[in-house]
Image 1 (cartoon, rainbow, N blue to C red):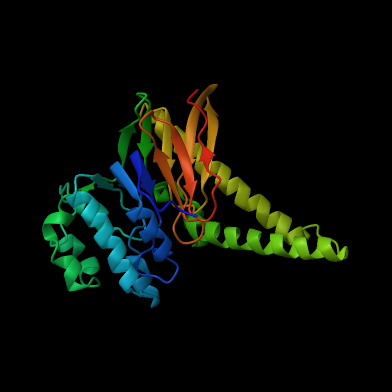
Image 2: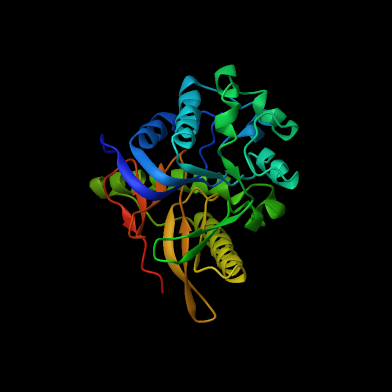
Length: 291
């Protein structure tokens, strides 16, 4: 369970909150934000799910308002907040295209989002403008290593092929793995049934793993092109930390997960150590040292 006292980090990364939908684990996210202090907070895309409005799934709850207040409070209290828009909140990309460097909630590009938010949030214009907006950016760790930060939707060719994003497939996969785990456990207890995956499931799993492999490879190539030592992204809804090779050199690949299912965040301490923090259970996943 999360700590009750505040934990201080040099940097924190969160993504795929999907505020404005029932999928958002807003209560847990609010607890995390209220018990976390960071010099820099990175919002790595899909913070607001404006896209869900088109599918009749937009639902704004009081807890969502509280989460936004917590982020705005952090910005007002000196935390450097950087917002990297994703495919579900493209209004931020429109701001960047217009040359606007801060999250100006009154700008015409933000009209679709602003129309969905309560007045008490819209009244905090000055605090919104404390948040920096960038399509991508580079973070330098305390040890001097450079990390490219992207949401990840720009790498998702799966959407072009079948109309679904890897992020959505990732959520389905996460839920399916949980279901399979429960089924396997029951069968082992009863000592009956064959738990081998049917042929169709194995084929779908192969397609999914190939898509993941391609996504990670392209992410690392972007880091190489940007002359960085690694990449941090979201989009997939699958927390992940690993070293990937490119031309025999290792690069750090990190996906900070989401706040719809996994409830995870990436953190950096004062010494530059990177760790994936899981809200639901105590174990944390330390990132390997940079190659």
